[in-house]
Each structure stands twice: as structure tokens, then as C-alpha cells.
Amino acid sequence: MDWLDALQHLRAAGAPGVLATVTEVRGHAPREAGAKMVVAETATWDTVGGGNLEATVVERARVLLATGATVPETLTFSLNEHAPVEHGRQCCGGVVSVLLEPQGARPVVAVFGMGHVGHELARVLSRLPLHLHLVDSREGQLDAARLADVTDGTAQVHLHHSPVPENVLAGLPAGAHVLIMSHDHAEDFVLCDAALRRGDLGTVGLIGSRAKWLRFRQRLCAEGHPESTVDRITCPIGLPDIPGKAPAVIAISVAAGLLRDLAGSAAAAPSSLSGPVETIEAVT
Image 1 (cartoon, rainbow, N blue to C red):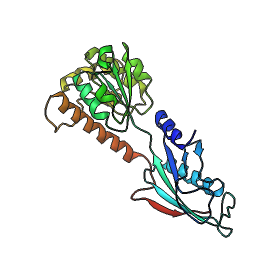
Image 2 (cartoon, rainbow, N blue to C red):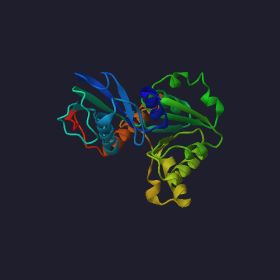
Image 3 (cartoon, one colour):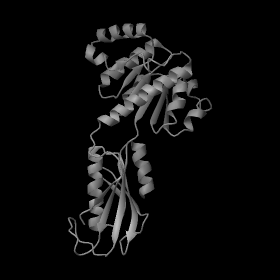
Image 4 (cartoon, one colour):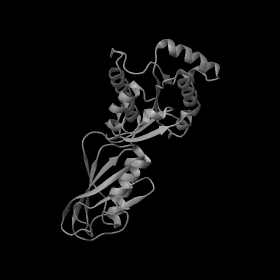
């Protein structure tokens, strides 16, 4: 596949990559300005010129992937016989600049329950670069016409109708963020229990009052979950300083809380880079 198909492939798989683009060529070079390639953890697609130049690009791109870098950087290569090399000599005679742009994996968010609040929340989240899973045990809640204002957004939306929604939860990737707001408290409880048994999810939130959470917390502990594990569930969800019970208000509050959590997760990821685009004179 070419570089564009590769980016789409990585996005669909929820995997990170680095887009490398030849941005400037002075003199002779193996590829023209605009040539691109994509580098993933164990694979590459397309080419920016082969040889030492490309090997160095791949090597540096994988450092960016390993450190969770988010800031682009530029590598500059002198292609002459006097330049030091690590991966073989290229004597084209030109100078090449290559921009490396990290492409982070899209977060995965699952909303269980497409009632009034769930639908409003899906509308907001669909405008963000996410993998958005919408789940309901009632088939009509996932009607295409009803969710037309959700499925035309930026997010990659995945619809799941299942009379056993905990099976959908079991199939989510590790690190997925889960928001539980079904029409049935019994269904909510089963989903909370299933989420805690996973142990590898991101944040888990439950809609409801403090009184509801007190009952749920007691029952989850009675099911054998340690208190420290039960405390992984946040209830109530949203930002407490945003008042109001209208579905749109609750949805905005919950979305804001989720964005705060996502930003916290990104900040906690290891990264050796920060600030503007960095220019590095590459060893060629």
C-alpha cells in the first residue's frame, strides 16, 4: 500500500506511526520534494529515497514512536562523500530536508446507552478524532436516521446493538475509556462488574447520583472486588461545577471531564520532545 493507505490502515488499527515528508531538495537527491513514507513500529510503507537517508529516517521515527513524541522535527541530510554515515554512503551531491510528523493512535471511547444523554454525548464526541463505540441493548436506539448527526463527524463511529452489552465491553481494546449510561440500572451494574474484571481499561465512568453509586459500590464489593479496584469507577461523571440536568448540559460536562482525562493520559506518556518543530542535522 502507499503512504496514504498506510495512514488509513494505522488509524483503523488504532496504531501510531510517523509520516516522513521530503520538504526541500537542493541539488541532486534520490527523491523529489513532496515524497512521503510512513513508519510504524515494525513496518514501513513507500520511500523517501532509500539508502542511508531512509534508514536514518526510519531509525529516528522509531525513536519518536518509542518515546511517545508528539512534536514534529526536521532532519537535514548532506549527500556527499565527505559526510559521515551509519547505514551506507549516498553521494548524490545534494542536500535534503525531511519532516517527521508523529501520528498518534486515536483514543478509544465507548458509550453504553444511547438514550437522551448518550445521544447528546455522542454528538459532541463525534466531532473529535476518536474511535467512538456506541452500544445499546435496544436496537432502535442505534437507528441510522436517528444517529445521522453522529456518524457524519470526525470520529470513526462503531455501532453495536447487543442484548448482552458486556460482550461488547469485553471486546474493547486495552486502554479504552468507558462511559456507562444505559436505560437500566441492572444493565449498568453488570457493565460496571465487567469493566472491573477487565482490569486493563482506561477510565470508567458511571452516570448517576451519589446515592446510586453508594448502592453500586456496596454490591460490587460484595461481588468480591477490592475497594481499591471499585474506586477505579468514577460516579457521578462530569465536572461538578457545571450545574444543570438537561441532557445537553450533562453531555457537555461529561465530555469536558473526558477531555481532561485524555489530556492527562497524553501528558503522562513518556516523551523526550516538547515545544516547536526541531531541526536536526542528521548523520549521513
